[in-house]
Image (cartoon, rainbow, N blue to C red):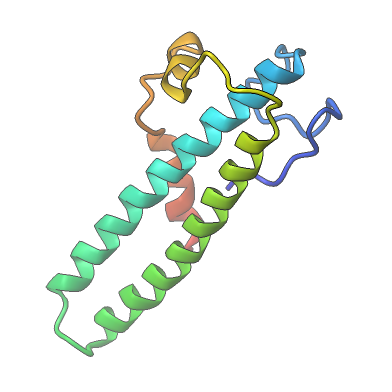
Amino acid sequence: MTKPRSMGSGTNEPDGHAGETDAGTRSKAWLEDDSDQLLAAVDDLRRLELEKREAPISSKRFHERATEIEHRSRLIFGLAHEEELLGQSFDETQDDSINDVARTRGDDGDGDPAIARELQEERG
């Protein structure tokens, strides 16, 4: 999971952002990354819920999935909050959407499977 970053410091830049020296461009890239993480986390949450639905009610697997779902939900709320704060950091409405930024960066704009794998590994 991406760690909180210090905006405008030029440090703690996520991979792939070292060349983005303009603060607005860097913030848009971070916003797009946060959005990708949020989409991947929601996909992961859906997968876990579907697994739980197949488990016998109150079985060990059912409770394990329920605990994972609760943990994942808290992470999703944290990601959404971080994305909201970053979006509020812009002084004015931007011409670009998050998908516009993703396309400019060569991303398809619908989440990053690598991030989904990273989230999966976090659960251990």
